[in-house]
Image (tube, rainbow, N blue to C red; front, side, top):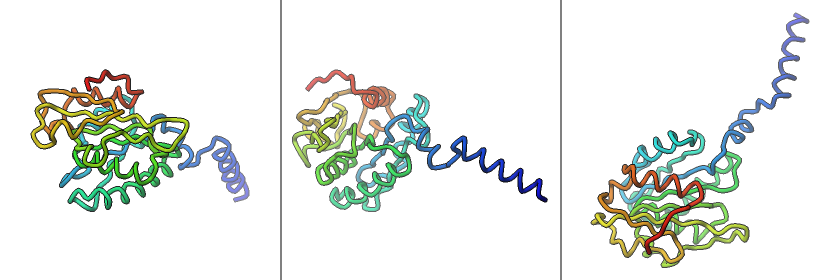
Length: 210
């Protein structure tokens, strides 16, 4: 019995020495900024299945990809921004990171913009909107309150989107990317869009046309 106790004690010391703390090790494995997907009016978190799968293939881990399930499906950006604020804090706490990236489809984009405008944006690095009517909320991409880094905005929209007018997607100060051959809902399933998202999240070296 004494030998068993000694063995358990030695194993405990060894585990502590190598740092096998679940929360710590999980945070250490997060190499990208965690990505939060925000769905649009009447949508849900599963809308981003293809984008999520693509990013996992490109090196993002499960614990770097999060999709919020908005309680208010009517697209109320004030209500949704409050829920998003809490969700961002939870993701940062879970991952040990200081900032997130946000991908918003349709009204999900204006939910993200509303959150940034009301919260200051100091917890956000990159924002990618997909067919979002951004100008309903603001004509200019908010810079955020972090003096060390301006938020990078990428607005991707399609000439074949017959739900959100292209002119509403364009934000002054953002990288506005116009594509063709994809409709409003196809923006979350398109390989072309996925490739643009990957580049955006890796530094945003994208050409703009607006």
